[in-house]
Length: 269
View 1 (tube, rainbow, N blue to C red):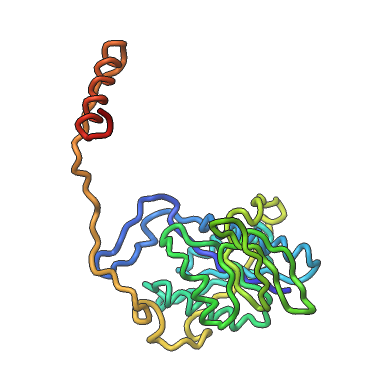
View 2 (view 1 turned 90 degrees about the vertical axis):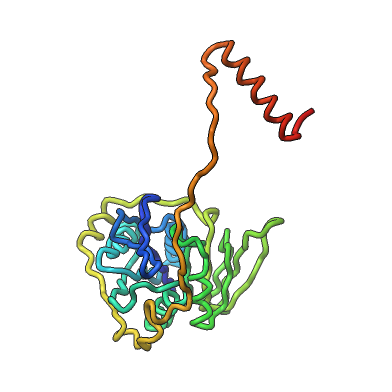
């Protein structure tokens, strides 16, 4: 069984800087970590590999050379292999162009059984890349997967439970297939000492545009139909009112003031 897990490097804090010219995120401006939701995809993949008794889990990430750090974390958790997709021509890619490159890399890794991604990335918050990869590869897709209940290698199927508004939906897909998973999929493991040491020694393949044979017009900003036309920071214009309620008199004054405000707003009479 071969499972591919695309992972992403995202800013570790909310201190995100945007490039006003391109409308894209300046990823070098803040410390980065592996996308927290991708850890659940890794966990799901590792459990499936371990339960099958064979196969490998390949972590795949697209970004500048420092993005290799997320591959080391993936290997420390138990991944067998990591591949960095790094090329200046990939810069500025939106979800369309990103999924195009990731799909081309996965195509090169065939034969595969599953592609597992996190529900979404915490920086863009679009949940579009996973479904985009499935579309480019023309393979079945199940989103919001909470449980993988069975993998039948002989029948080439995978059965999952999708989290929906009123419970769970049971879906059987032919493989290869792509799953996007939610946190309910499994509790996360911690890196082992052996895993950390293996990650330190690991060497990762680097694939660029030439390796993936993707036309230049489909890469980066050129291949991104999404355009950010304006960037603005919301301004808080409301004026607050503070009442010191440190003693009984202050509490009484605050209570009266709140009651007056609610009455003026028509909430109480």
